[in-house]
Amino acid sequence: MPTAQDILNVARSLIGVHETPPSSNIAHPITDWAAAYGWSAPDAWCAWKVSYDFWHVAGGKELIHGAATGGSWVFRDNGQKYGEIIGGPAVGAIDVMKYASDTTGAPTSHVGIVESVNRDGTWTNIEGNHQDQVMRVPRSAQAGTQHWFILPKYSATPKEEDEVGISQTEKELAPGQTWMTMAFGNPAQHAYCFLGLINRQQAAPAKVKITIQVGPSGGFGTREMSVPISTGAPGHVSFGLQVPEVGQLFGNANLGDYLLWITAVDQPITVVKTQSLIV
Image (cartoon, rainbow, N blue to C red; front, side, top):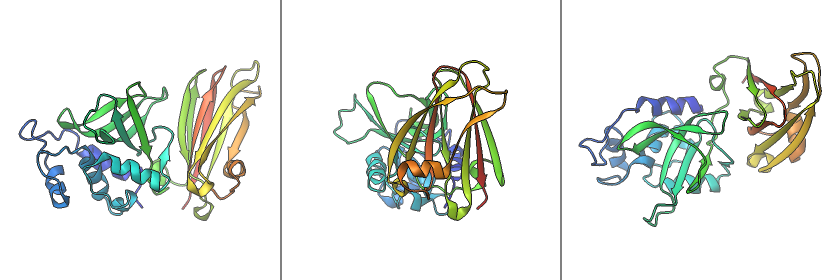
């Protein structure tokens, strides 16, 4: 299966595509391709853009269950059917939106694909049919817009971390900040994640909230826990979370991919994610 970056590379290649002529809903080459699957002017084309992204990578259309569609709700409905709805934005997730101002009667309003997620919880999509073009669009959770995030079952390969073998990522979190990341926990592929939380303040223990969400392979659901991170020498990893421990929370030690939200509660902390991606 392709990785999220494989799909995003196609999405990025289309940034700057404009409707020609203006306000016509004709956007080459997206609507040229979509015409073979039922699109006709002046139909909207945001969902066709997302379909195009996946269909133009080998194995990509299987990630969206063969959908070649102009209906953004199709991605939402498939996400619900196949257990791919997640609780927040993630790189490569399909972001289906419903605007409170939408009076068309359609079940959803718009769709894009998440390119990046920021530490403050905002994110950036690549969207088609936004201001009559393909462009990057900053998004945030706000009143009046409902979001459904669908995370296809991408391949967990070294390309996801831009590393080979073992990779490591560090994030500094101030009190109140949250970092979300995906962990790969597929023993059959010898992939695992170790999450280290470091209290670099040699004062009182730091409080950290950890939220974990898994898909159908782990029973689907969310668990939250609060842990104290003890004091120690700078760089000391005082709490670690590995795949089997996550599995115990869900009654399944052989989890597939899962999502982690780490929130610093009262003191700055450092999150160290060490990911083995030997497949």
